[in-house]
Length: 272
Ligand code: SF4
Image (cartoon, rainbow, N blue to C red; front, side):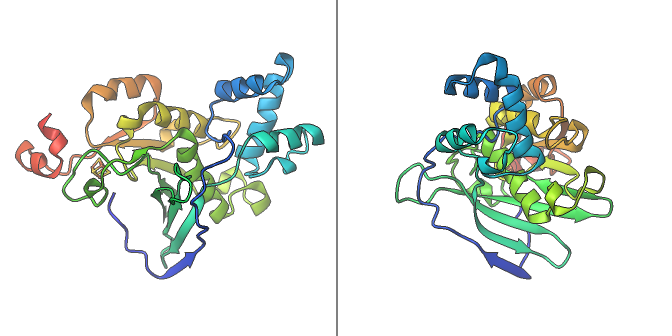
């Protein structure tokens, strides 16, 4: 990803971020996965669909980060869920805002090693006339080495989970006041489009990207049409057909050159 020049207003909001997540997150689970998690947790089979719908509504329609606010659930169940699951956000290391409304967040993922800060990723919001695009990361670092790209100089640390991919969108909605409590409705939403064009090659993290986009496009949640979601690949050709079958969003192939000779230099994957 090309680093944007956003230097006008910067806000540090960084907690230390050096502790692993204590509880599994429910954010980013598809509906069947959420029902499975609740079943394993011990909820009765006959309530699974309804409870999953209530939790889904709390996370994706109301932007809740704690179970306390899910008042359609009993107090006892809210307490139990809170003791066993997490629906909090990723840590924001910095948030920068340009005069043109572009925003960039540096986010810290949960640490894998106690005492060692987790790795960082970037998410960028770009407002334009009549639309607003959120550029979302799919990996920490990248295995590809596109010569123009800063991320390409960093080794791949790991793939993002589906929850970490979806979590970037939730943080952007928080900052833009896009939840119902922020006074906006779906007709005047600020994030109208998603591009999987941040750090990483999304087709090398296929399952998590697929699941995240299923959550994002769910009509009873974040509800972003797959026609407004673009997966940008550097050209992982063997995965493109599968992406069409299993993800079904728009596809962009970053060519960067008009002939193979130049593209081989800029995007070495082209040689394959
Ligand atoms: S695929 Fe290329 S452009 Fe995209 S993050 Fe990796 S190195 Fe950068």
